[in-house]
Image (cartoon, rainbow, N blue to C red; front, side):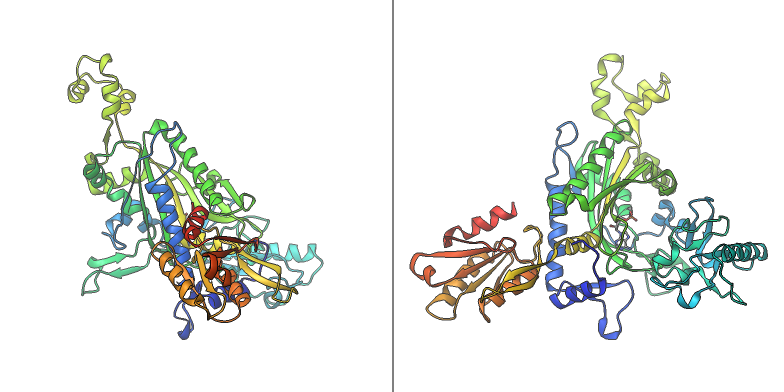
Length: 548
Ligand code: GAP
């Protein structure tokens, strides 16, 4: 993996193994919501723990070899709705919008219809001749006529006869499958494939905070964790006395009423993010942008994602979100698509968010940063050490900005569920191994990086007699406080190995006859199938070695 796979088959495997279940399945499920089973919850927790450990507690040195200062936050999901006015989410995410990359026009997705000459057989993989669907604006006669004319010209070009009456379908229905979007010709262009997917359809889930459902207590489930960080920026500065540059990190749930949840957990309506807002001096922001972009890509590789499956992509100017000066999407070749898909966005947000909250909260003073270190470093070039005094001399704006400014922000924003899906896809392997009689059999093995593997080691007594179960149980109990380990004494040992291969357990430790004589055990490696004999007292350090 990831070669192309049948996602339905893969989802069934994930369910059967206890990685991921459909939410509320016994009632028919609910689109865009998922549950993690016993193995899945361990996997996702390991992912979030690895992120926190490597990015917050122990980030590598900065671009000039300096220590990086990072702290965490855990903010509420529901915040004052004014947060979403300031951030732009309240105004920007009201309607399903479709952009045309060619004409640069923007349309409400629910106001576009398409002429669909081959409605019945235009599903993906059909051999219909009509590979074009012409979009027009609902209720706009001129737009409809233009689409009709283009349909007629196209029919002529491919020597096909148009049906008597052309079926008209809403665009949102037609693009329920992404493959259909590539056939759609926007209302103001001639060629297909220039419309983007609808964005920001009812993005924020609303609720009411309090007993009465009124406009006054309307509130939203956060669509990103980032804003909790921005609104606490001054609190963190005041309570920690951190100095620039520094980062604030948060993991947590986010909610988006996606118009088209799809591809298993890839696009969900409830998901978890792992976000960092890194604050720095504007003059140094490009340096930090590059640092985070490169570091974040490397992080995925250190956790077992093959680098040829990772595709960092600098967004074009026309793709950038309203707040962004530059963004690199770290994309992954998910097996459900021919195109790489976003795992994480690393965005240069400039001072957009801090400026917005300064303006909307009316507390501009809380968002300005005075750089004491820079000020003190230049002490010899001034007659006063008081910034207030110095300001009376009317220094030029660029001089002031050197010492007092709104920090710029670099935001590496990752999805915990999306990365969990990538890890599952990357790990899934079918190979051939010898069975107990030496015949080849196909096995499914999840080749997780040991750090992410839900179970680190399984402990088996070879047989349930001669003191082996007791010895195995004692080893299990000695490892349990340190790692997630599993004890299995049921069935043939070959069968037990297979179960652990499917769960992605890197090591199987067997207590056998020799253990009873010399206190050694065999450790079987999941990937190489090699068995090594080690002292029972060394098992813990052997596992630790693989995890480090
Ligand atoms: N604060 C910036 C922000 O939220 P984003 O690109 O909208 O940026 C960041 O989201 C990451 O969150 C994405 O790269 C993806 O990993 C994850 N994500 C976003 N929408 C998602 C969805 N509907 N389902 C699963 N993960 C999602």
